[in-house]
Image 1 (cartoon, rainbow, N blue to C red):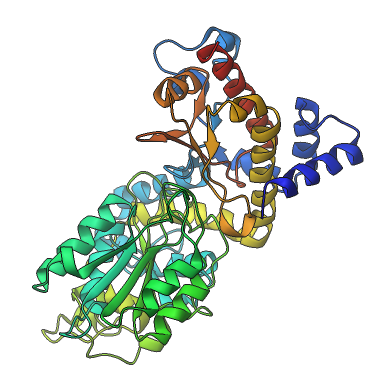
Image 2 (cartoon, helix red, strand yellow):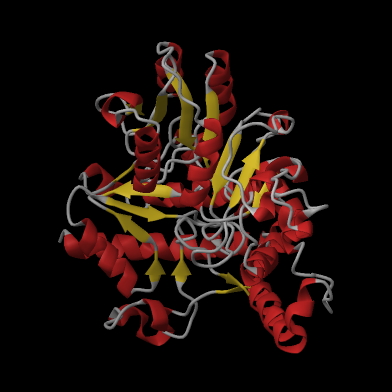
Length: 462
């Protein structure tokens, strides 16, 4: 699907509301009509003074105490006010009850089973049964944990498939797992790259690689590619992997809380994700895993065991024999941080209230509006080759992130956005990622971001 759909869509909306689609009034109209707008007040949005660097641009001198244009949920989500409240409650319980807080809790969140309190919320985000998910560890550690259980190479099947430009940590984790099993990553690591002259992967090419190689043991791709923002067809790729006899797992770092997921229905074997990006749980906070219930009865599957994964009914009997808990909980190792769980719970409550279908609807519109302004308001800069959009135009092939490729002066452009209080991020060598998230971003945020970008490009390429 080309960008023509988004041009037609917002042109039609302009006619309907009687306002120019490139005007601030147009953006403000949709902010007023937004049924999810109330959730913005649930978050602490950094003010421009604190994020625009030591020398803010003169254009925002009168706006330094206003909210920043925070478009960086793909890297770190902003703080839910509810999370601060819940975490402070846990400090108060710790102060007043000490160890008794594990069993006696004034807010009905005893610490010993507290990880159970986020299962329903996590299941909502990834389309799973509560028993198939749990909060534990951190993303890369969890990838290792899952590969320890699901990457079981043999002389005939020993390869792992990832994207050629997967996030570096995934490369490191996969290569080290291959090494640990005595294989050579230069042989056993299969990387898939876009076709020459293209920037994103075609689903048929991924499936073709899987079908043509009988030695693949594990397919481990990103739900959304961190650099380009491409949303992979998880259902179709998983089905192709299973038909070829492969285990299929997913790194959902940039997909969870961003796009609708149906891991149970799609028959995904396992998945891992962090929660500090779109899920807004706090920097470096606890991560999550999914294990399909089809693997629940496989009690003999090798795993990295720890006491928190032991059967909950007899965990505190301190028996020396490990008996795994049912489902994903059986892969836990250590008791999770209570404050981490509390912070995550604060955000999950907002997701459950807003619901993923409604958030997805707004996300498609908000990101479509960003694309529309980029290709119309900044048309002359695109035609001059000053930037291009790497992310697919088809809403079904992306989340809320658009990756903009600046062949020249990317850092200069990024620094100038920063100086104006626009929070986004850069990925070398040439990409700036902009992500309007539906829980707290507005159409006005998008309008101001593109307007600033227009001013910057006019100045940089004068």
